[in-house]
Length: 146
Image 1 (cartoon, one colour):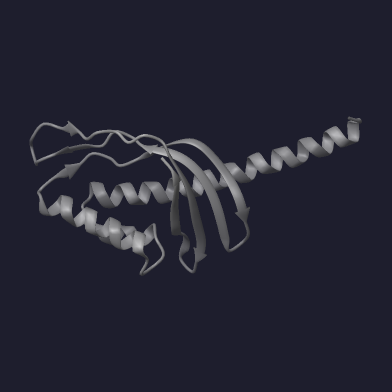
Image 2 (cartoon, rainbow, N blue to C red):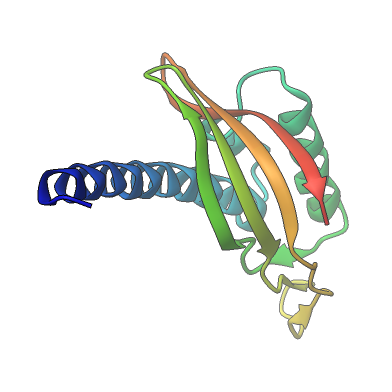
């Protein structure tokens, strides 16, 4: 490959890596918001994660309320990203391909000993993130494998 072609390929690759890093950061912010909803037992915090009225938001809302109704405290809910890619991205929408797994989640009754829930295996997902008037939100998650 001639030097100009090599330089062009490097610029394209750097742009793809940079774009991937931006979307990984955006997804991490949404993941932090989801974790906060579980840790604080406050489903209203999910408004910062999901588009309004979506099935995903309703599902997590139900889970947060169920844990709280059982009197359980949650230490953290995080995903370990094993693979990440940007399939499509525009100023208004992105389609992300993520292989992740839920990190160990610890729960307890107030003042009790922490117990670690069973860990999930890796899951391959396609995540659609959209820009809303208040920021980026998750619109859809489709499980592909795992």
